[in-house]
Amino acid sequence: CISLDCSLKDDDSGDHDQDQGSPKDGEKEKNEDEEKEQNTSKKKMVVPGAGEHPLQYNYTFWYSRRTPGRPASTQSYEQNIKQIGSFASVEQFWRFYSHMIRPGDLTGHSDFHLFKEGIKPMWEDDANKMGGKWIIRLRKGLASRCWENLILAMLGEQFMVGEEICGAVVSVRFQEDIISIWNKTASDQATTARIRDTLRRVLNLPPNTIMEYKTHTDSIKYVCLLLFLFSSPAFLSLQLFHKPACSHTFSNQRGNERVHLHVAFLMACF
Image (tube, rainbow, N blue to C red; front, side, top):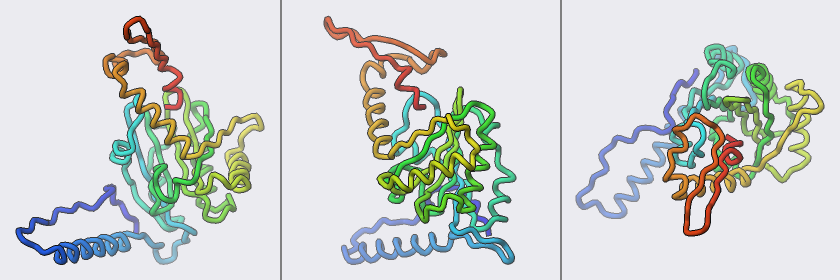
């Protein structure tokens, strides 16, 4: 009953060439294709096996990995994220999880995502676009334990906020790791406060732990700014990312004006 489909889209290899098809024929074919795609999507919904313990929601594991430093556009990010599989019961979850690498053993810029089935781990997804996320930065060595505690609490409906929870992410970075949990409605302060308090409890965080809430709207604006800066002539003309140092200051001569670009701050969120 476990779906192991790692593709994000069905392969559409049908021949759509028509010499003189009428608009009505084309519209009919389009409607048939859409209906076929919807039926295929319904067939892929996983269900608990006989005698298994069903979860309140179905979930999907995702994995992504990218080159550090340069922010990813929406298109490149969507192409880079891979679906591992979906599950609908406690038993199906453990079949996946027991064979997955723990976050503490991942290398480079890697992320595990666990989201409700039908929700992509992207800011622009309909379920996410009006929401936000709680972010906790962890010192190395804590990610595996915190990730397991977080996803077990999420699957066990310990947050008690109805349908607000969308999913969770663990992000492995070079100097620290990041845990985050996403919810649907950033403007609902009572809900975000309850999520924060539950998160602090299930992760057994000390009282002085810094927790940051960021709306997805703010995240999108920030990345758009970075993409604009990284695509400027000053960035494109320099071999910045071939150098080993993580902090660089460089300049671009434009007449009598010297423009200094400090990259370390811009890269802090990556």
